[in-house]
Image (cartoon, rainbow, N blue to C red; front, top):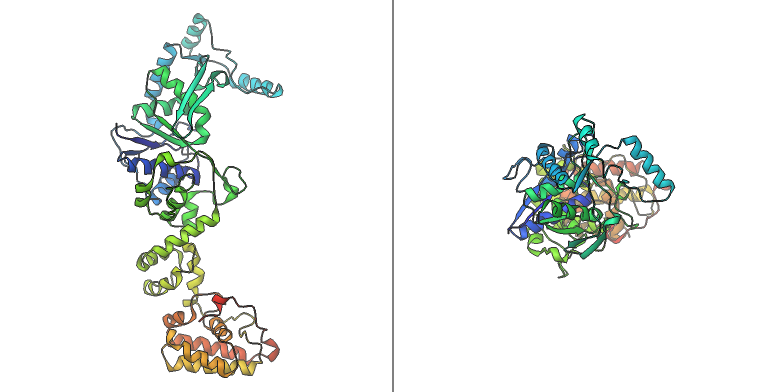
Length: 493
């Protein structure tokens, strides 16, 4: 039987990393097995339904490149794919369960249920339904139904034990006495998750249900529903939790609130897929960098671990940086476009991209690195010249360096002549290049000096040097800064 799996989000909030990983694993397994990946929207909680959340979820999945084979916007043979449009199926299933004695009508009011909950909490007992309506007199039941009294349909949990076979965790046994008589159908005719998911997974011919570990305690109820309805259950796979660095469940306090926030920060979708795949899975080969096609080829559902995965921000940044390095410059330039100032035209951005490519971890970091191309650094920070000398000497050194730029096209070819200027005045080359870096670019930490000067062009470089020289010549000897500590990578041209 062809593999069919699904991701079934509830549109009541944004798509977070845990949900995105569930999408990815379902997608990878379906593609690896040449099956179908289905997107189904579980919108039966009408009070919390949020159209913006739905749009955000769909956009996040599309951003990752995980296109669904059936579902919203694409249709499919098991349409509709919104649960709110499938109510008659759930109502018919609930009626079948009632008629077979596997479920019953409950007329307990919210007030009574709240009082029951508080009483159980005071007694330090598990909070669950007490079975008050489990065995209503048939005549009373008939009378209440005829009167249209609002009620719900509850599952009648049988005595005994229920076995759940999980692909990752093996055979799990649950004592039914720990299970609550779950509400299956609410008084407004809408199902709860438990009934709707079970009915839809059967009706849509799902072979595998791959979802988060948080659903594991509910799975015995779902297995019982399959048994009560006479259906074969799918293969269950409960993915491990994703924990924050503090070993608590991953939440907003550990970082971005939604998947799309990572897009806005400049993470690549291929890097995010790569990172998410390793939250609970490994190919076992030592290889760590994959594009989406590579993940499909390498993915094996049986290799997903059952122990929790830990979110590592530094690892995500590292993976993203590596994927940035792998992009062709033209492609990187295209992806950088939304993150850099509009004043930087496409031609200028294309020239700057190779310089940026090895110096950013996220696309958004490029903006500050390239801004100097369109903004002159005439408001120089204190300590323009890193050599501890008087203003006259510093101005003279910069004048000679300017002459070098005036004599030839700016670029790496001027390095030797500039080193000679530094040597002539007893300066270290790093001191001179640092002074020039601040004069031309405006920052001690920036793109490579000489390559950047080549992009700026001779006229612009000379204009910036003239402004810097005027600043130094107009200062006193005391204004020249003491030499700062220079990292090795900052001392190069």
